[in-house]
Image (cartoon, rainbow, N blue to C red; front, side, top):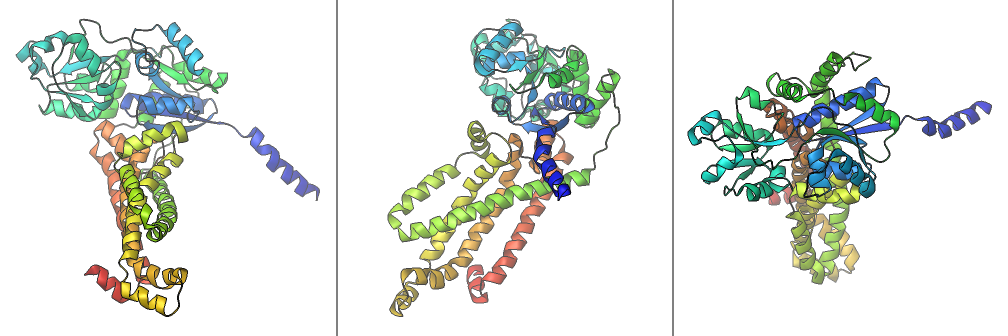
Length: 493
């Protein structure tokens, strides 16, 4: 009896002593991954339990996650905080940034990590020589030069729109993934692009940075950005990084990821050991196959739960609309409109309400899965032969019994087809959940895009395709079990 009491008491008090998990975020680009990995390794070296929330879509996604306590920290830049988060039109000092963050959001930043990763425009040396380009203002003379910029730079407060107005530039650039822009400029598909001054490709590809001769861009000092609940001991652990990384070192670290094909963790660990910042230098090697299996399991969870919940919503709704036909068209129009919202936009819109992770990802996937299941449920019920309905009524079946015994069984093949379609859609759409920290196979694809690494992209794309085929086979088996042979043949014809 006493032993049972002790066990129960331990179960009650254990959560109070459980170590808090520190969630470290990272924006979707190489440098963000490396810096976040350094923070995570320093925390783990000091005994903290760390959860990595990498591949977050961009500044707005990371900031909302930080503000809402979904992550505890991530690396950010002073110029970005000033222009994008605080929406200031003038360049702020670090002291002013700290004051405004504290008063508006109760957030904090560390001292600078040591380097200034400012925005820049770059061109190939041949283009610079051909058009005599040295400064950004020189672009005024050549409005026909093709520009290609990262999507974030095109929309930022300190991005292309204000830069073009400031320098009176007339070019009309296209949007590109940041990592792919370097490939495009190398292949002469574009003439100039935006860059971070510490990008590893600059030296490797021998590209030329145009001088910001009118000083449009502010300083972008790298800092650690903390959530309100972050403890002092956690900050002290991370702030070992302050002042130890210069621009040349950061550029070299970025180049190692791109051209030596090293992992972010390997590069971060080696740098910290070199700077004598790690007490424990052991390195756990990553098993690629184990990672693929783990990510596939998360991907399957996302797909399964969202599909199950969509079925529980769409089929009863389809039956209801079949019975109350006046609501049919308005409901289908509304759900159809929701279906047209781009996946990444829908995920981003949910962050202020649902945060990041599995919940907003599953909600978004439910929205995309509802329409095909709902439409097929309604079409299946309407496709039942009217003569059969009359016969059912004539033999005394009421509406409920007619629905359960006649209409739904005959509509099942069409309903299952809708569920199969929704399942395949969800397997593909779930890859975008990586942008809000939900994990899954999309993490490989997103990271591979940032690195322009085809092998990494395939690590996510191939299992995702296999998963879609697996689900197709599962539904084929379900159809064989639930649908009589003559109805299956009718569907095939």
